[in-house]
Image (cartoon, rainbow, N blue to C red):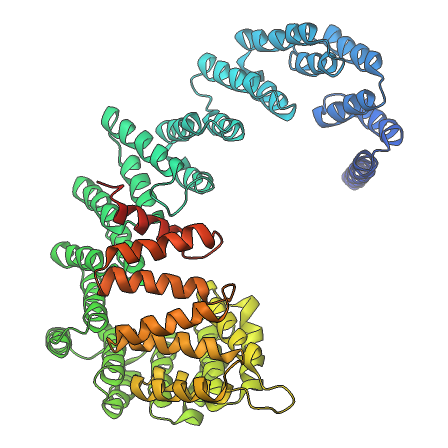
Length: 595
């Protein structure tokens, strides 16, 4: 009986506490709403009741003081704070609020007296340094906040306010000290490495010449010389990767491995990023290093997969021998499935042997043990079937993946391929329906592709059944997909001839120019890009055309002066272009800034 009554009393008290907490929270939200809307009298009444019940809640106290100040009751605020300090001298952080109360009345000398008292109190009790620093920061007294945090760390070596100090320096625009503080934070506790990367990334760009990038690099290098640590190599590698300078990032990753002989995960990850950005020389170094040093079959096979990818991308005449050498050594089995998929891609899109590719993939499915492996094989099989013109069969494979792997990235990729295949067929309504879903829910890369294709369709759809050239443009896109570039160029010629003045004209010129570059018909490409620019100086493809001209003169025609002129055109006339950073970097290099 006694136990039952005790339990009942406990439940009652617990329920009462929960109820009171809920009421307090609701009242606080109501007061906050009044405060935001400038109804300080109403807010004051609620905050006072909340503070009376919870006199050690600094949030309630700060808000109450702020309300008094907003309604010019500075004396009331002063008396409240002084009474609190008189009753409990340990609450030294209240000196910050008291000082700010005088600051609001423009009594700066008196304000400074109390700010200094708050700082001096840290000498006696460092435990208050955190709250004092935060209060100074809340009132935008940033120099005082830094002093409070630094004094706290000086008095208590175990305290670490480097993160707070770094953020304050960032607010002040003192990026040198900000980066120094972030690095000091990692120096004291390496667990903050990813946090520092996240916050430093707000100030770092992919432009190596950006002043903050240079500053961060110099700060790291100085620290690496004075106090060598793996963390500095990790941060340098991260910085170089942000700048897309993968060669330098590899140097750091290689140094890290040689010093600690850790796993190859970071080098493999860097190699993948370099491949996506077409820095094939760094890719070769990354995966060559893995092949030389790894003792694990899985890692070696992954490195060999990228060896084949590079061979395909660079159209290496020995690509077939590279594949066969791998299959001779490791066989055609579950372990080499990804390499078999890459081989099928090579057979189809470079060797024009789709039937051999289909047999390769059908055999590969028999080795697969998971639905994800099967999905990757079916995606490639669908591509090969589209290449051969068997669209409906391809759509079956893509739809199977969507059904079996709902919401997975592979399912999203399959949905895009359904949309793309429908577009090739001329079924624009169904293609748009699929692309509309992908625009907001897919991974960034797929979403970007989906948006581009969606805009191509919507910008060029026939109006009132009047032909717009979109059907022919889709046919040219299919021929490009099939690597039938000369036929695609011919179809685009028909569009240019028959649809002059329509929105699709500049897209046809631009797409044809890209194909001319593939065919090494550079003068024709230059003519087309020039026409795109002449058609509409503010057109959506104009910065693309300028960039492609710059790249063409820089990489194929070795005319650095013209290349520099076109890069400069982007820098000055298209400040919001996606090519801006790359154009600036290449323009500076051509001008000799890096020498």
